[in-house]
Image 1 (cartoon, rainbow, N blue to C red):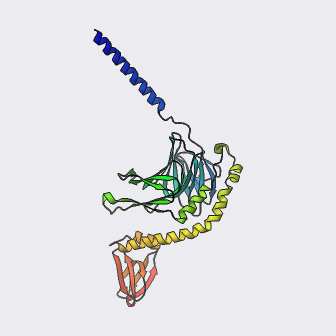
Image 2: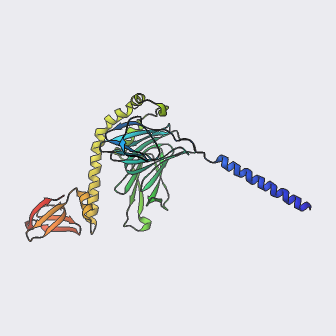
Length: 337
């Protein structure tokens, strides 16, 4: 009888301890609060906001955004968004970015469908984090200045200050590859090669940050954290954002020059890859050369593709590879699209 009493007391004590532990876990769970204010503090050019439920509209300075909103920018256009007192992000030209989370549960998150987004993140609390996701990677930070880009199936994450943890994605899911910690002064390039074996399909290479990347980050770094942004008036925002306008004016001409250099290098790289391939689609040729040439020969044959060399011999990149034709066999050449 005494043994039963001891066992009963043991069971009761164990149950009470378990209940207390459960209560403790519930009380320690991260509580969801109201989202932080995300406010447009600087914009230029063609910037549109597409609400989660609604039609796209032109963005306004001082406009408050919500989770689910999508921001798109046209050519020579950009928008800077302040998220509470946690930091600012800048949606660069020809970009499409979706606001996913606004720290209601300790996380800030944006999804980069295309283009570039630069960010200056600071003042995060111990349990908070900020992420920029794209189809190729997740860039997770706690406090830093960086820029993330995604285009033509590849991504980049350049870090000017702090550190960013980059995790590659394949088809929207995290890969088995370990995350790469990108430190100050470096850039991670994430490339996806669908033709490569599964274990080598996604690669991450780290290189020194480029001058162009540094200049773009410097602009967002010039943006101040405006106090009480949720109640700030447009006039206050204009005055507070003056440093951004000044930095933009200073660096924009240099950025244009550097972008042209980068675009030329990227175009040359795409062309070289197409030449090395055994075959290419007409769409790939058009994208790489911005044109399709039609070459008519005296024997009645017509070749379509892109001329990559002229002289005594014509070299033409076609869907079947590179074709070489003596100059005296070429009757006419015209650009058809």
